[in-house]
Image (tube, rainbow, N blue to C red):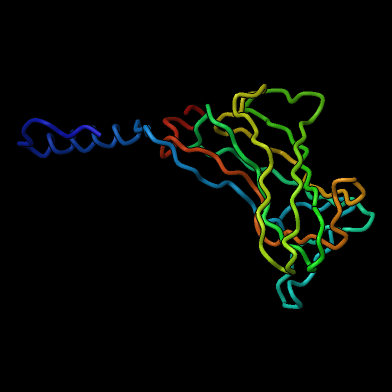
Length: 207
């Protein structure tokens, strides 16, 4: 950020210098990127038909959703807005925090069906889909994070600040890739990692 130059002889000079620095701060963009999180607690997601059960974490008074490992496909629904600090030319990586409820071996297949809803655009006829298959830790109640394939921010429609990621998150235990027979508990948050290149946007709807 540039320094204030010249003499500050009056209160008006000081006021103008402060305004100038503030405007420079609003315009700042970083030459190096960093990562941030946009997420929501899984227990606060909307549960429709075939909802996962709320279970106690290790018999405590803390509850979380557990996705069936038998025959029932269970699902949750939600939406997250792309923050104004996001780099519109980068990608985002959706992820979920979960834990196995037993020490059994096997893989859990998490699936995400989603729309990228950019401001003032019409969504396409078909939703997009990504999946991730991850092995259970072999230790009950061990925290794990499963990262989905990246979602391009230059997609059609474009994923810009203020875009909405509207999603269905589910587990189909009948899929051949899902071999973990016990419940898989989503105890924490679900959301996406994204790159930031500014402290915000210059305008409410313009980066």
